Image (cartoon, rainbow, N blue to C red; front, side, top):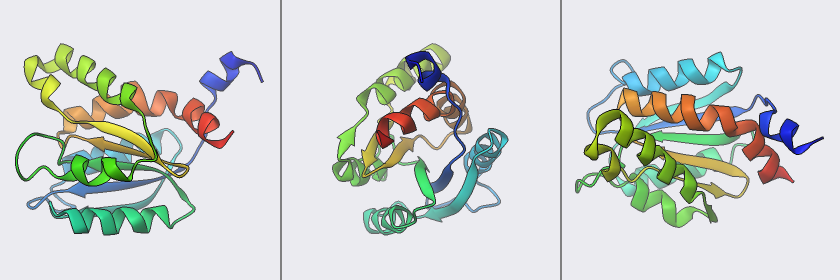
Length: 166
């Protein structure tokens, strides 16, 4: 397979979506609903979808359960990437990363700056690998979810999984 084909390969895989919020429910979680729609439209499967409160223990426990499920190759979190004291997703999950994918956060903030201005650079959006599972920590807004999935995550997923598995 040529390098060009690796970059463009399409792969269907299993996702977990974890919304971190003290106030959202599955009915009011517009970002989680949008994530499910965008991911399944591309032929992927939602294996798990959960909500947990802004508590480090709850985030770790749910993430570990996803990591124990061989069907899940990608975890997308929604919420907890800001600079407020309740925003604990990044400080909880990044220390678990075996490899960081710093380019994801850098590019996400670049796109966000172009879309929403200076506020876009204050996100702590991050990505990394825990074993062979790709973890994305995204802001809780619907627009941020759409940007991350449609402009970065889904278009490059086939190549990234190829790299992780080789």
